[in-house]
Length: 82
Image 1 (cartoon, rainbow, N blue to C red):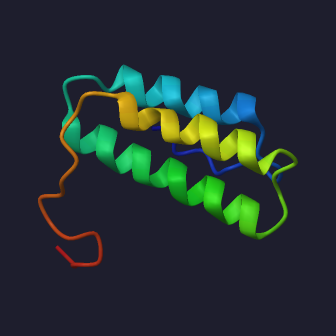
Image 2: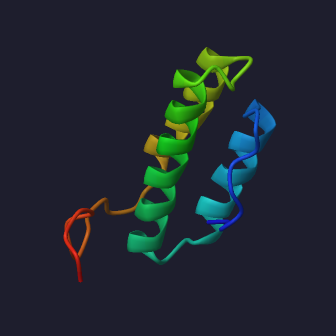
């Protein structure tokens, strides 16, 4: 997934660009899972902070990643230092 920070205001178009990046990681389940989690966090933060003009549409778009076929697991818990 892009290392670029989320824009000041999240749009549905931005969400779909991130989804395309997740799809491009096909074959690397851990990378896809990490990118999916990053997307969810960015969308939720934008909604919570009032930086998403269409919160329901952005959330619905982000959740379409649940239809992607990859394993969702971590080699280490996200909060565990390596």
